[in-house]
Amino acid sequence: MKQAIYRSFLFWSLSILFIGVLVGSFSALFLVALELATTARMANDHWIVLLPLGGAIIGIGYHYLAKGVEQESNLLISEMIEPKKRIHWKLAPLVIVGTIITHLFGGSAGREGTAVQMGGTIADQFELLFKRANLNHKILLRMGVAAGFAGVFGTPLAALLFAFELDRKIKLDVQGFVPIILASFLANFACQFWGVGHTSYAAVQLPDVSFQSIGYVVIAAIVFGITAMVFSLSKKYLTTGFKQLIPNDILRISLGGAVIAMVALMFNFQSYLGLGIPVIEEAFITESGLEVFALKILFTVFTLSVGFKGGEATPLFFIGATLGSAFALFIPLPVSFLAGLGFIAVFAGATNTPLACAVMGMEMFGPMGGLWYLLVCVIAFYTSGKTTVYSAQQVHLFKYKLRS
Image 1 (cartoon, rainbow, N blue to C red):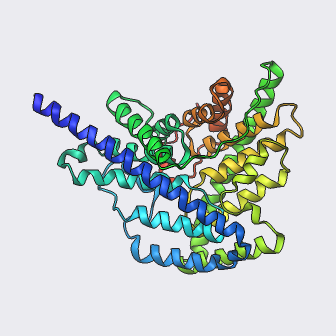
Image 2: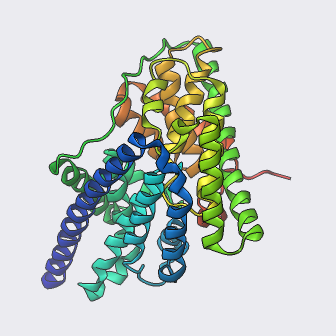
Image 3: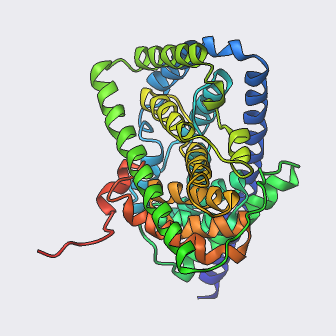
């Protein structure tokens, strides 16, 4: 009995150390590489003409090397719901390199998808060291997802909840809670240990609590949820439509890159490429135009639908923050407050992770606005309907049940 306890303690201790340190370190390396790619692109606007070539490189890499891991984030979610086999290690380098190429040449994408895929893949390799690890497959994957999310965004508590909400299994059993939260905090610490920080935004000015301010927030939350639904449905149908129109993966992503480059250069839309962090930062200070969030939706959905790599998180932050900022033109609430609400609410609605996003708001903008963040995220979550940016999540979305 004691030997079994010692073995279990050793297993979880090593898994937390292995996953937390390794995923956090790779997150730091990934963030540095992404920053270098973004800086290089912004210093050389003409590099966007190479986006079709970058797309071809990604397409060729995935065509010949991605057999068995084509589903990417959906593969992780499927394995967390019903474990079947270990995720091949090749998913991590494929998605990291693909994301860096996407950002280097101007694709509109994020980094959360890459982070959780990288973290989950690294964590899943731990079963090679212990034969009994397969019995804890779900927990290991959640540890990797949480570590990747925390390493890239610097929000370990939100990362814990994201790892559970992602596969719609929200029960926080003690056995799963402890190693996941420890791996999440360790990954965040490891990333900071390497001197890699995270983006900080302007302080959010909270409004006075009144029936009027609550009413305005409810209205904004509904719009945020509808925006998340539009994003998810657009990505779903465009991805399917492009595959039917151009079945060849390499040709589809290359032609898509050419269209993005042509439109961006013709209309000077470079600010909508890449992560768009400067635009997000500006949204917390001054009102954005109503066209800003809409154009980011178009560029991001098109980029991801034709096959470029990256995540949806930062573009959704961009969309939500600029939409919320634009509300300040019509709603008498602080622009930083509305931008902060949109920042977390659109992501909550698109990924169906309202608790994680509410906690993310508290970690990023301060705990005093916690009830506001929870209110807006829950409303956006329900308003977005049974839609999601992760198709593997679809069949598990039981948000409400209509009675006949």
